[in-house]
Amino acid sequence: MGSRNLSDEEALQWYAWMGTHWQTLTRRAGSALSIETADFSDNDLSDAGCSAIVSALLRLSPKLRILKLYRNKLTRPESVIELLGNGHVEEMHLSHNRLDA
Image: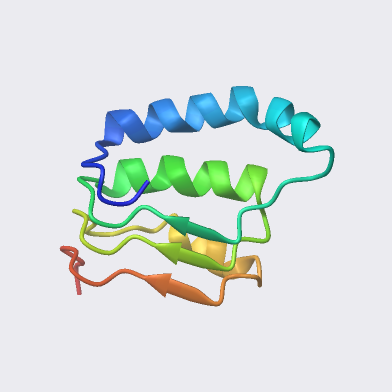
């Protein structure tokens, strides 16, 4: 999903789509699916879009190891704190955003 000019609205649509189709994808794969790396870099995401993505990742793939959110429009992405608290995230890329100090 990197470099697709993904907007917050499209992130919400992705969240809804993943919620609807994840079980079908898992069933077709024949085993549990997991996402180890999620790349949402170089998009137009604000904190709201980031929150939708993080919510989906926490619900669907709690063992996420790497999250790439660099080159977006994040200012206070507080939702990523939940990912850090799950103990699996090893890398989080947040450079080139509009982060508040």
